[in-house]
Length: 116
Length: 113
Image (cartoon, rainbow over all chains, first blue to last red; front, side, top):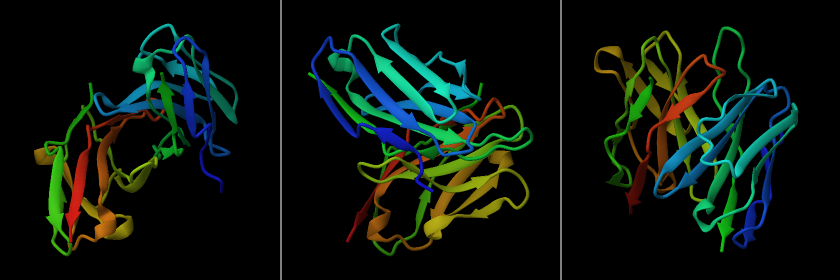
C-alpha cells in the first residue's frame, strides 16, 4: 500500500503565480480532505470530499483557492493568484467512511509551499 | 459544534519518565476520538482510536489512552518515554458527517536525555 501520495513535496513560487497541489488518495477510500498547517493557525481543514463530491468548503480561505476531485483517485488544490501568506504545509488525507462506522484519516507527507 | 482542547502547548519530559498528554472534547453524542502523532517534516500518523467498548485503548509505540465520559477527556499516556517520541501530538474528535474530524491545536513533546 503506497499510502496517500502528494506532489510536489516542495514548491517555491513567486507572488501572483498559480500553484497546483496534487493528491492521490489510498485506493478504495471514499473521503478526501485538504488541510493547511502553519505555526500561527495550526492545522486547518480547507475542504473535504465524499465520493468525489465536495461536502464542506467553508474552510477555504478565499476565492483564490479552489479544489477539485475529478475521480476517486485524484484531487487538486489550486491557488490563483498565490500570495506570501499562503506559505504553509498543505496536507491531503483520505479515509474510508462506511455507512455505520467511522475510520481514521490517513495523511500524506504534505507539500511545503513557499510564496516569495 | 464539536471542539477539542489540548491545554498543554509544550511538554518536556526526561527519557524514561512517564507521560500524560491531556485532551478535552465537546461533542453532543458518543464521540469518536483519536490521537495522532506528527514527527518533524512528516504527516500525521494515527496512534490510537476509541469508538466504543473498553474505555482504555492501546495504540502503537506503547501508547494508551483512557476515555472518561464524565470528564469529557481522552488523555494519552505512555509509561516510559523514548527519545524518538519527541514530536507533536494531536487529539481529534470525529463525526459521522462524511468522516470530518476536529483537531486540537497540538502538544509538542520534547524529550530530555
